[in-house]
Length: 174
Ligand code: 5GP
Ligand code: MG
Ligand code: MG
Image (tube, rainbow, N blue to C red; front, side, top):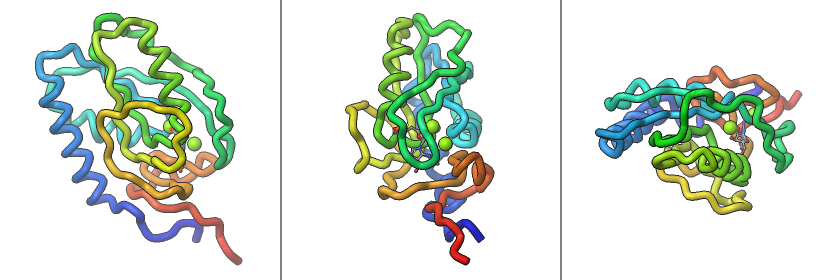
C-alpha cells in the first residue's frame, strides 16, 4: 500500500468546504463573481466549493504547472488562460495548496494585469513553512505541515488525485 491514514478526513474536508463557501457567499452577494480554478490540483476542491456557493457565479480555469516530481522548480508555466472576460469582474482564484507561493504570485499578477474589479484567493491547504514569496490569501481551509501531501486533487506523479481525503505521501517499503 502506498498511502497512509488520512491527515484530513473526507468529513473534515466537506465541513470546511461548506464553511468556506458560506463565507464566500456572504462576501460576494451582489458582486460579479468569476471563480477561476487552477488545474489540475484544484479540480476536486473547486467542484465541491462552487456547488455550495449560493450567489450567482461564472467558472473558468487556468492550467499551470510549476512542480517537477516533489520539488518546486520555481518556474511557472501557464498552459491555458481564461477566455472569459476578467476586466471589471470580481475574481476568486481557487487553488489546492499554497507552498512556496510562487505559482499564486505569478498567476495573481497576470490576472491583475487584466484589470479585474477585485481579486481574492482561496486555497484548501497552506504549507506556511515553505513560503518564499509573500501572497495574501483571503480564504484558507487548513494549515498543513511541511510534508508531501496527496489526495483530494493533489497528486504524486499524477496518481492519488481521486482520493476523497488528504494524506501524507509515503513510498512503499518492501
Ligand atoms: P507553490 O510552491 O508555487 O506555492 O505551489 C505550486 C503547486 O505545487 C501547488 O499548487 C500544488 O499543485 C503543488 N504542490 C505544492 N505542495 C504540494 C504537496 O505537498 N503535494 C502535492 N501533490 N502538490 C503540491
Ligand atoms: Mg496547484
Ligand atoms: Mg502536482
